Image (cartoon, rainbow, N blue to C red):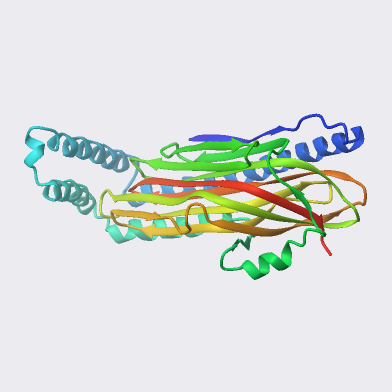
Length: 367
């Protein structure tokens, strides 16, 4: 099993206009939030680990015990090595790929038939396990984001310059967080961070890779945000309108049906997000911008770039708790990626790449 806990880094320069009390409160609230996220991540991981371990135990029982399970895994390893050797030059240059692959798959299915296991029973087991995972692996609630081009009237009505304080690059602070897990260690889970406070760039590339899947689940949750101080002119909920230009918004997935009894589900979700750091605010708020869900038991390639590079978008978000008049609070704005994948004998290579330029962040106390 390979897993890493939730981690978060925060950079906030000293500001002469922020009182020591407000600065200390922001530090305490930020630390409390990180600890709660860590505890939630650990609880979620334990529940998911129990589900995946139970599913793999059922597979061993279905195959007639650990001896047959090990024999099947060795056969799968050896057939995969042989298959790739037969494709190497010079002989492999003229080899029939489909014929060789069919022979590899047939060897695995012949083994199952020999021990009296039907392929459908393995798929049914995966579906039960995946359903249990889905109950635990929930996404945070999110309102939709908007295209500025197709919702221009709504944008004009919303951004009354007299009602909002407008914050633009360069932004003084930042925060980035990461939680990733692979419950059996077969998935390789990684995030590449893109952050430039000077121009308002925030982004994440998330990759999930599994070349030799049994029954497994992995996930990666990544936040990247800029931050600044906001002095509340009144008591109430904080409304934040993010104006963002898309640099890249790409979903890619390739899957390989390795043995004919395979199945898989992969999710990729990207949101714009904001977080008001205050004791009354329990969590960030999200605006879902792009998502895909691919369920496949076959060899598949998916590539989707849903909106144009350079396109303008906005999110209208509210804190879930009120701040007090004249209090100075830390406001964060950025992007959130949450990708996951479950598989049974499907090779998975998943990548989501979402990069945004925050052109402006408008903040007010909601009317």
